[in-house]
Image (cartoon, rainbow, N blue to C red; front, side, top):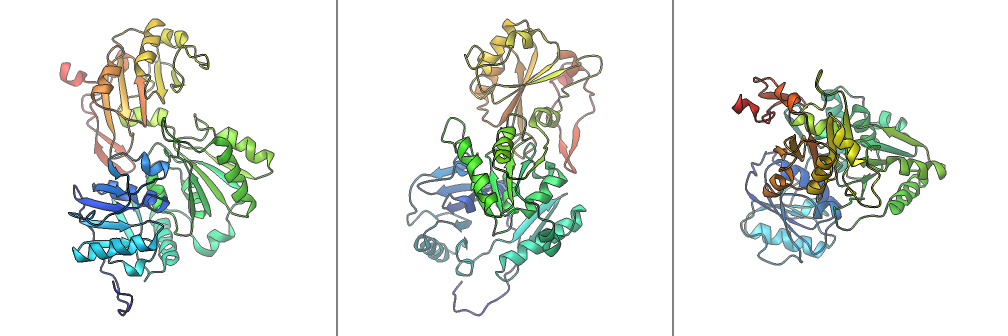
Length: 431
């Protein structure tokens, strides 16, 4: 788009990007907010950047070319996003895209691109996008107002500003599907001046934020770099003292292996008002999404949620693995990325039968969800063969509870959508 051309209303269209190459140049917070929507569209995403935020670095199903942009990188692309912090590079990306007649969004100077990104949201099978002649704040405000009407929420604009809370809100974002955040959590997220987000926070929620919201990446990449907890605490305190309303967005529930109470203690000591919004924990949502009940009448009267971050036998472990092995109920293990084998061995050493059915649920409640099933003795090898990656929940479930599944439970209702249900246990084929 030439800046000398007379302004024109953009042509609104939906792009089918399934399996089609999309090139994203840059890997900062803008890209972090755009990737979830592109992934949801099924795009074949190639990111070109010498450095990336932890959240971008750990995003599954993308190809990261860890280098600077070079001419020819856009070959074969159907859609391009120029989002570096260098205007010269962004201009070069737009120019190359225009030569090969590929639509390109320029994040730093929208009018210089050949496409613009609307303010969007999705709910109950609807996708809504709003453009406002380059006025991003207006398009975000209208988007929020429309979403509020469709979802039965409260109004925005001046009313929202008048009721904006003070301090920091620790918000549980739920297990992954953006529709599974609580109404209260989503409302506070829409009022935020600053969002400090973890890697496991539902990324599509970030794509819905107003353009003026500061997004701080506190992602903790497994076995990689991390923003120290003390630094996260200080960021929360500093932004709140600037008079900004801060949302600390976490995956699941803030108090389930989320260090939420550590942050609350630091904020309280600094005199910062704190609001805590519970979230749906993946320890229950993941098995539920996979068709596995963690309790069942007459079969299991208890379930236990355990951190697998520290291996059995490690001096820092606080878990009595022998006691867990003696239990009859369900054991849910979170953060067991590289320790499935030793955890299974510890449970069997404690008395749990080797043929206890086991399941690993990957990316629960998202479009990438999949479930690997086996036995306690085989699950580590089964997961390795399937190349399962975090985030995931590992579950050991009593055999009889699985036998109780109904043969006709071939669909589940999740976030208002009917979706195929994973086979509950494999017994449907054996019975």
